[in-house]
Image 1: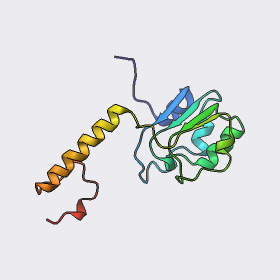
Image 2: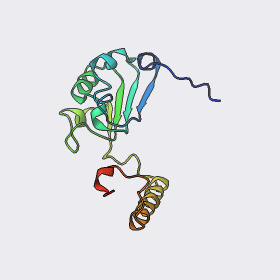
Image 3: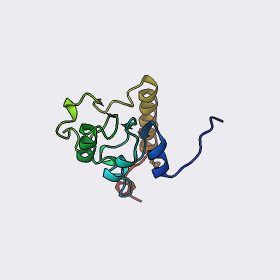
Image 4: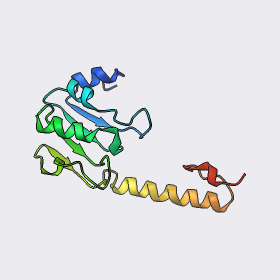
Length: 139
């Protein structure tokens, strides 16, 4: 309805003004954005990461920002949290937040409800719907 369409990552990087990352951290997404990907972006583009820090190679990002290869970045997560890559906090073209991108009332309410539902399921001897490590359950 909005005219959006699925495109390859390289096309997205070359043509977007804002790139917002929303992916889990997996072997495939670790350093998804590195030197090659940053070189594809417009000099006027902004990179936003609210997913996981290691999705971006921050050393390469800091260099790209210093050299004005891209216009700026907004990071809610960091590659080696809570440590920041040297130089990022001094840059005027970077916005840093302390991993609070999900800190809306609506998100926190849903997180609380999900946690309570998972606790109730566990107390009933049922498998919690959001169980991350199923190996901890005894069959």
